Image (tube, rainbow, N blue to C red; front, side):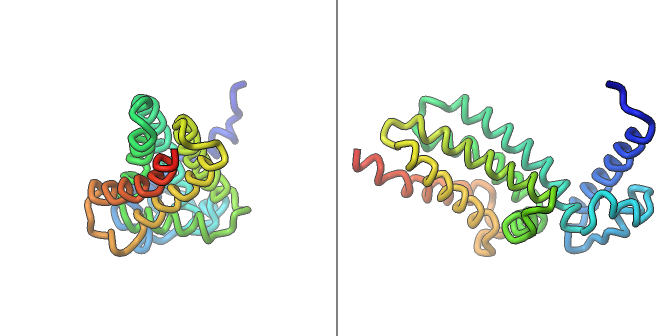
Length: 202
């Protein structure tokens, strides 16, 4: 169905706000950007901006949700291509784009994950972000269930452990100045140690 003029205008404003927020956060980091700057670059009134996102945190979540979704899509495609190489390699293939996404701009990525975990889960943009986090966890679960040594219940629990490892490893101050490859290598070691008891038991 064709959309009306009012709906087209709303979509246009939302896209301008998203583009402005994306550019400013990438240029300066979330801590050095104000909602007024976003409104000015998007060429909308500050009151109009608040109709789409009432806080700077919501603006960041809007922007990062798009990046997070694209990273998960890329990771799932890479994981499917790595199936048959055991459990570890497909899981690493899945999470690699996610780690790169979170660390693309470390301040923004750390703030995004903090807001998802500690913010109001009823807020719509956070709900969308938490749904994406659930999709990532489900993807890890699905990969682990293909391992004959890991049962379905254990796979779900291990997936929660692995996503916690990702969260801590990508946001910890100790890893702040490490390369993506160094962080991924550390995550690989942790996941290997997490899965090893199941293979030894088998």
